[in-house]
Length: 425
Image (cartoon, rainbow, N blue to C red; front, side):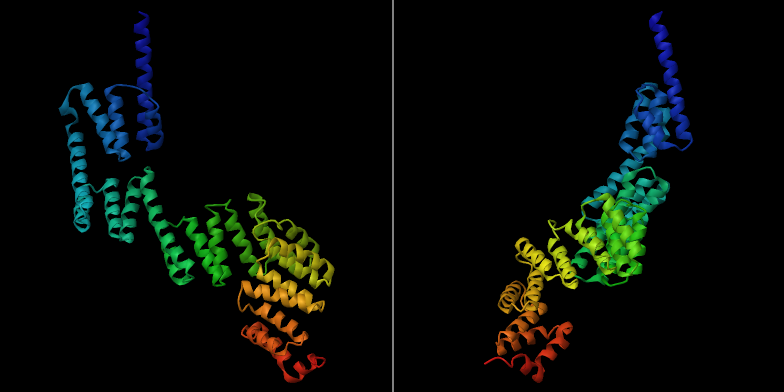
């Protein structure tokens, strides 16, 4: 009697469970139906047939066939499900045949075969997915995307179909990155825009395209794309940092600082964002805040830039003693920074220690040959050391940079040159 009661309760619960799964399926809540089905362990004909329907809906044809065969074996009546068996068997065989054509290297023939299958199974997502795959193998991404999208439209529940769209979009990003690394920005932009055409929610493509617009100084377009990318990746500190740079370039300091602060809220030690904030406060004349920020990153990978700006601030404030202290620390930490060496050469020229300035300028030029700022400082030190020919040689190198041309011409003007060297033997 006890066993009969348990059997009755178990049967009742199983029936209710199947009804719940069926209700979810009938309401088009396929994901919930599948999850509930997989959490159940019922071995009845109705349950197995429901499994067939669910897995067929998800285009998992092998699983669908497995549960259909179970339902048939329980009922022991092959005729009852003959329509389903014929449809499923024919679909599986058709797909196998077209796949054999494709894997044998006959891509064009496979496309023709699968195109015919889309007419035969016009409401079956997996056929469009296979056609998309064949076009991808051909390298025809446009038609691949068309068919992948059709598969998603018919069956939006299978993640693989969406992933294929993302995969092609990411291929275009990789192609664009190759051109970007070569600074061929227009070609790179073509591929990034293609990636966005395929997958309008691809935040990576937005970020890459935004970087290009920043590089070509279209800061408005860059900020539009980057802000759009934030909709999909609102915690990406690199995107937030780039937005800060856009608004810095657009002279909107308030917005720039806000985006740098947002970037730092996700990565508090992001030295690039701290440095850019320091630059803004320096440009606003708030030297104290700028120095506080720069001092935070003197041990980071961009310490030489931080030291350079600190040096510029102290030189601008006329505090040469502090500038010398900072400069010596900077060079000890970054002995191969040609720009730091040149800044220190500037300081020593200002202090009329021309031998030291000459030494530092030459060290800089050893690291970066023909570096105009170092050549200019070398010209000044050689001039006041009475090395006239060496001074002219150094100045002529610096003159190749238009930023130094006017200053160099002033020094080389005969009356000026004679004046500066009047005490030379």
